[in-house]
Image 1 (tube, helix red, strand yellow):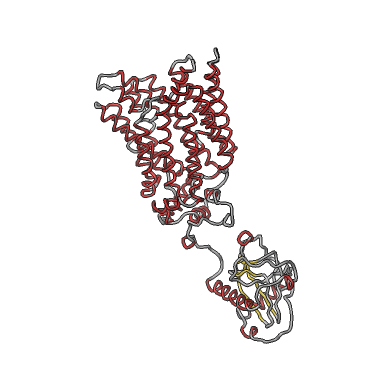
Image 2: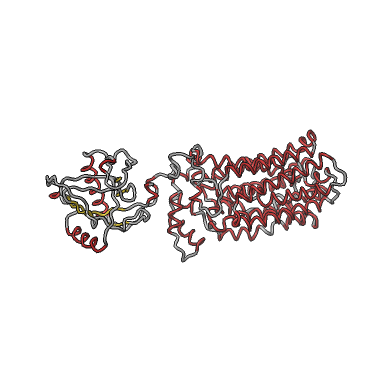
Length: 603
């Protein structure tokens, strides 16, 4: 409604009872179809500050503070006796708009469950289209001051409802307010829900360094962080250059140039209804069809519609004005379904957590700058090249959006924000690893059933095994009994191949009892100088050791004379040692507890 209010300016210019509004005033106050707008100029300056303020006070709190004065500004704007005060109110409303545009999508992505994130991310665009349509109707039916005062009505309950919105758990974790983050998740997921898994996922992608704006700017130098920022920025710029701003700002002018004989009000209402219907449809299909196919299809249809309209106008086909009207309405509808709302949703879904706040500020700044530029240059471009050629150029830019989206934008449907962290990792040896910006010491501690004494014993046993084997050197395929031996991935660890040895549960139970009765590591057994050969029996290694299960199990190895362990389900990691092959000539009995990782951890 803040943007749609400009529809009352013709009536404001006609009313001279309180003050006189000049043509220059109308230009700067933001009449639809003018080249300079106070809204866009202020938004360009305010957007870079929104991300910084959001990191200091919290995104939800900043939105509340930005929306609180809006109802009062509407009333002052309606009954002000001075033109300068009208400028102040418009500038303040532009600041609120820029803060809302920068903060709301990242906040929605951080608060919404994966299953409804597409719907939630599109609702602001639906409300924006409904507000603009309502503004057009109010401007047509009511005096300008009454229409302005009535525009304050939707914002009053909105401010009160924002008090019920919890703060972003991502921001709370960055501020070390873990208890508050847990309470926020309980409000979102339900008070009886188990929020531990979700909280651990947030902590795995959030560090304390991200609360510092300078650190976020430094993180932008990383390839995995800057790639989505550049892609989304390009989408926004192409979106504006592809005709979005001129079509919605110069609707009446373009229809008149195409010889479409419709009243100015009806032109605006037709475009508004089509836009609202398309955006509402988008809200219900994004979570079913996915963002990427809808965006690509929308961009292709927009390109074809603008090309048809441009060719019709360029060839000056007589009696074909209805073709131009249908083509422009098709563009508006296709744009509203995909190209319009989806890039805004990407502000929350594709931007990585380490740079989300600052990146959103940068992108919205480019968005408002490109919108201002295309509005300013549109009339000169049309005067130089003609409306037909200009529409065809708009169509080619929409086709570029489709190509870029198809080739470079990943699908976000059904994927968590943690999963999307790895979407832009460069292909190579480091693919799939954790984000380097997340410091290991800042990760939440893993919870397991082992006591500290058991873990210490496990590490001591692992070190003893490594020390005993290191003198033997790496293994060779010739002394591998079952399967090949793959050297360990770290050069500091010995090579011990494990063999696929099945165990019987009854025998295993007996061996476990005997092993627990003994010492953790029998030094007397290891000092025996016997050189005879023996091998591990089938009951030595239990059969439940499977690489597919990431569980904690107890391994009991009773080794006599010589130990030979062959390949067991490929290379295996026990504790911190990669095990592939070992030969012990001394009698050794080992009882220890090791955490067994899943196959994905050492694949």
